[in-house]
Image (cartoon, rainbow, N blue to C red; front, side, top):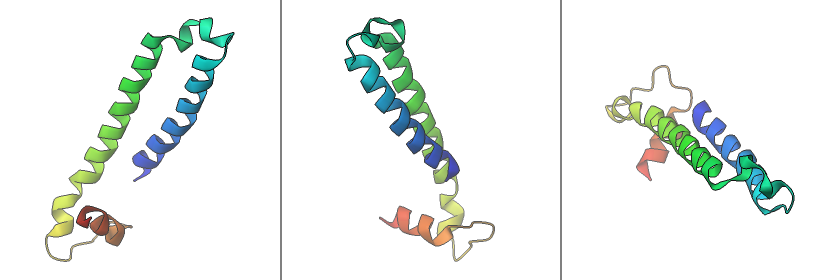
Length: 84
């Protein structure tokens, strides 16, 4: 859950910064706002989101077998998330 929270914060903050860098008339001339740098950012962001989803998905089998919520803090929330 913490990795997904980090992913959300990372995406929100850096996407806003990249939008400003890309649209600003002076800053758009720098290499940090190039299409290649943004493609690298998209790849890195996608990797973080996939890793967070895989981490959350690894908890699924033991959550759906019986009523085993040992060691999980947000067990009910995760069960309802996968139930949707």
